[in-house]
Image (cartoon, rainbow, N blue to C red; front, side, top):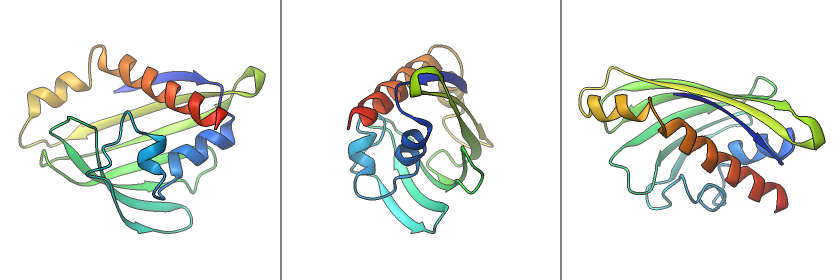
Amino acid sequence: MRFDLVTKASPEQVLRALTDFTDRRPQIWNRTLDPKTYELREQGDTWAVARESTPGSPFWVVARYDWSEPAVIRWTVLDSSYGGGGEGFARIAPAGNGGSRVHAEWTSTNARSQKVMLSVLHRGPVGRLISRMWASTLDRYAQG
């Protein structure tokens, strides 16, 4: 899956929103992160390991996030409900008017179960839907 979005949030705000692993994370990402399954497992200065899922989704992942590279957040799936892995990144760039452009990509690999559903999620209109939800979340965060 890959998508691009433009948000009113500054690059610094986007980075903070994507790397906030405090108790606020489920509030910030309330449309895309289920607070019932969110669990921070480990955290350092530029990395975190968390268990996450989307509300209503049968899938969960344990992912290691890394933001040691400026303006890039990378994640690697360490464990998942679908028995596979994956990785991805979000790259943040300044946009005109103080906002940001975000380019995001991720893949799922070696799924033992739910292969067809994962394939559907990574193609078609789902990327546009997730892009809109991220943009809405980041715009709301910018007004914060």
